[in-house]
Image (cartoon, rainbow, N blue to C red; front, side, top):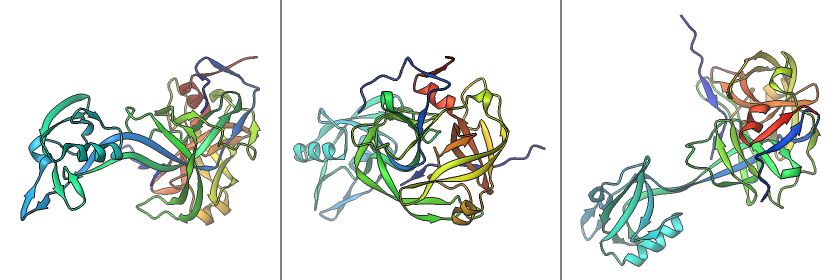
Amino acid sequence: MKKIIAFFSLLFLFLGIFNANAYELSRNDKIYVGGQSIGIKLNTGVVIVGSYGILENGKIYKPWEEAGLEEGDQIVSLNHTAITDIKSLLKALEKTGGKECQIEYKRNKDKLTASITPIYASNGYSLGLYVKDSILGVGTLTYYIKEINAYGSLGHQITSKDFYEGEIYEAKVNEIVKPTRSEAGEKRASIDSKAIGNVEKNTNTGVQGYTNSNFDYSGMEALEMKTRSEVQLGEAEIWTCIQGKTVEKFKINITGLAKQKTKDIKGITFEVTDEALIQKTGGIIQGMSGSPIIQDNKIVGAVTHVLLNNSKRGYGIYLESMLEDMGITIVEE
């Protein structure tokens, strides 16, 4: 009988103009290594996350029910006005004056329309819907390539591939919650309000994009890289932030290397051996996704997951896989 082991995604949910496609890196080129915590915001569009009845003049109204709207639907337009965020939805609602109008929404890949009548409540017109327009999380920056202002982070996907656009922000770790037998630990962080880059891609190898003029790389180290075939079993490090904005280096032992023909977020298996990290965090915790893995003073990959029943053990992705998804090729000199 095969042993089933649970693993846990390490994302804690809470402008460059150069196209990286066709960019080449020599195996001896150096790239800047991350480890700092970042806030990641994905703009999802206005998505319905719940509903409620509106009490008005002793009667409960449910406009969403009559229109056939469901949780998970994305509102595209109201009364022929494009809806891109919650602010635009509120403006469009006020313009209806409470009259019946057309609502266009997206369910999976289908676009649908229906008639709906907003109800006036104490704070304005309402459809009786709870909505969100973004996903916000805390992860770790993996790499930065100065020549094209490109960055990579997380090492795994956040959510649906339909949602690419967004921003990244600096983050400060305020508290560490250690793991329990049933739950992974987590970094609790505050996120700055000024964006330091955009989100270009949200794929199975991570969130990647381009930094802007607010991004500061002055404290980052530049290292050469290792390809899949060069990574070895044995001693290595992870670079990550567990307090404030300071990046620290912690010892791990690489225990397994998968020979992969395709990109996979669990190419590297490792165990935390650094007593200081174990004492402070219990091992690998949420928010460490994207923490660079360093071996022989070269960047080889990034942390992606932790074993839920053993927080000292985790998985990582090869750096090469992350670079490939940004259209960056590693070549011989």
